[in-house]
Image (cartoon, rainbow, N blue to C red):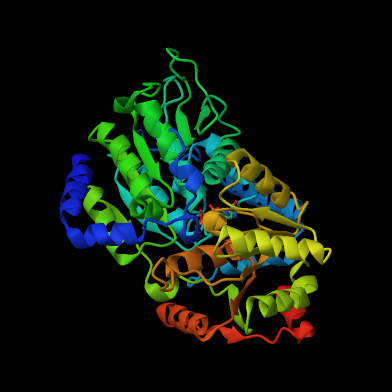
Length: 490
Ligand SMILES: Nc1ncnc2c1ncn2[C@@H]1O[C@H](COP(=O)(O)OP(=O)(O)OP(=O)(O)O)[C@@H](O)[C@H]1O
């Protein structure tokens, strides 16, 4: 695997004016996809089949079923969402669902410690992306992978299992690097690594994020490092905490945004240039715009590819509606009308700018509603605290910008409201961001509701183009019909 081709592809791309134009077009501000705070952030072994021996006995099979049943029970107790869990079971048997799998986790030949971790998390069967990607990621010799799968279908768990499978716990130095576009996502993915690895205590995790200061001259012993690109680059480069030549696996989560955002791309490329030629590269996202996809294929040598067809990108479990209004104030009124219904569980409301988000959160509070506000000008630690409170259900509504559009996994979110439709800086529909935003609901087979607020002819036009892009009908919703909304939201 010649990792140099990334650099080569970048050089070629830098020479190609239209590509640069494209990248700059996608150099998203907070409003269009990534956080400003992040831009300034300073910064194999294949899993042996130790899990189940070849000579399986019936008793072992029984034991396996018990574990699976127990795991399902754990999940039921944890979530108190009996219907949803049943639905996951149904979907996992439906070949058309992204949660469908033919294999069990045992058949994916994971280490026993990891199998225990998977079951402790309440996972019963792998999803389609897990079942397809894991054998590729665990093959010998290691293979590169660019993988796309719908939001909330278990991509994080897939690459986390790959990293945990590849580390050698006897070697006390970083062996796997995972780069996430935001501080919050890095923390969230770190938690998944900790949970999955709970029965594999020899493997340690380190966060390369702003504020985590290491002592100069002392090399970290942790085998997995998760972080944001700026800090990761500093640690690999000028601070020399990590020896890049010893890295076996390099993961880019939300890979499309890492490629399409110039700052992230530069930092990721500079990290990647330091890695050995045989380092395994894994790129994951729910969306890959065509040009970004082509670029990804040029930077990742000889990759395995898992790609969705356009019509597969949206999830059928998320029902999409729009509400017709005439002004921002009318949108606010419509939101107040449905507030009771959307707070049956939890809701995320997306605005285009920090200013609108601040205004909306203020107005909702004045109406006596308890809401949380999260936008990019807040300190990253503050943002993480807001997400934690929301995750714990202390606030039922989170008003935010695109800073939260990607990856954030709060399973109780049943409603996403686009107070403003997502557009790029030229005012065209931002289809990728739309998909990521609505993907904050309907996680892993749960039902979700996405409501789009339309307040002008222009925004109706954007909605129509989003419908056309995904070939998916977005139905009109009458916000005076509370019975209907409650029915949908619950
Ligand atoms: N095999 C599984 N069985 C049950 N639940 C699972 C399984 N895999 C993942 N999950 C759960 O599904 C939810 C969504 O998973 P995850 O966050 O990995 O999705 P994702 O594809 O990375 O989403 P996004 O595109 O938004 O980043 C999480 O709460 C996770 O714990």
